[in-house]
Picture 1 (cartoon, rainbow, N blue to C red):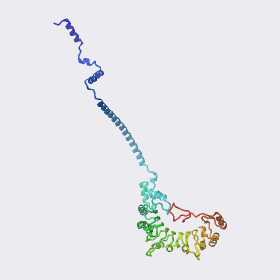
Picture 2: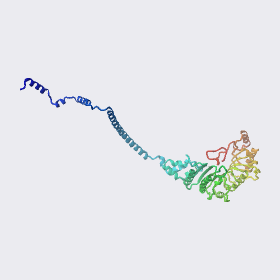
Picture 3: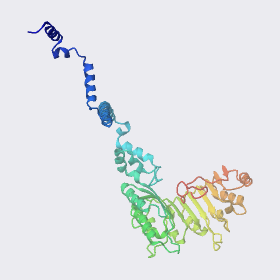
Length: 444
């Protein structure tokens, strides 16, 4: 039987004992976590420093990816909104018709024609002033330009040594095709030397130049205003008539080697031809042109006796511009008097002659005279008075280039019936110089 002291100790133990569940509810969780971590640390489960840093970096990467995805989503929403706005604006623009595009094609075509220099002046075949520019604006304008033959009827072509011959030949043929049935104004300036250093002809270059002149000659039935400067050996036979030719400017052309001068035949079958400008005049050319029907003649480096032969036949001239040359054999004063009843403008320039050129003219309709003072010989005032008296003309303007002020005063005192006497030149276009390179006092 237990003693009192043993029973007392047993009751004390029983009173102090509580179930485990009762004790757990009384423990602070944070304290517990701390104790567990401390326990792991004590038992050797501490993580290595490098491994811990790697896991930290991975966590940072995951966080950055999440931030990027959020930013992408935000930008996608913004982009979607901008695309919607752009579609609305584009739809509004597509629905709008510019007033210029509502014009009838015929009116647009007429506007295009006025973009070019006034016909018969020809635009350049290449460059900003070319009608090709009109076809580079939009598809509609290109279509209108290609369907407007008048845009392509004026052709200005300058050939220089080795400069884009193939391209220019292709464009020449293309323009001739686009011009349809329109009459043509053709300006071709040949600025190449087809002679090699030995003086022989460069056969390759000559063959290339022949391609240009033959392409132009093939359209001779449509020629209206033509200015050509080929070497005579490059000018082809003209086999077609020239029914519409009004103006022809060119270097002299040698007779055909076989005696069949087709150019002579063609020009004498050119009923509308009124203007001729030629240079470096060989004697045979006097028979080439139909002088009696011409109203304008420009001759450069013409011998005086050739000039007399021409003007004797050209009785219908209204404008005449001659630069006379002189050789020692040409010394005799012509005995005939040339009366040109309709001539209103006369320009005489060139070498000092051994005889008085003005004395061979009677010009009743003369209104404007330009003459180099050297051609007036030693009695300029006497020659001018004699011309005015013989012609019974009413001269309004007298031009004596490079005349001294003192001499100019003498002319004005001696010729009071002449309205204006100046030491200047008549305004005119030079047929021997490419447009843009004009020089004072040359040409018409």
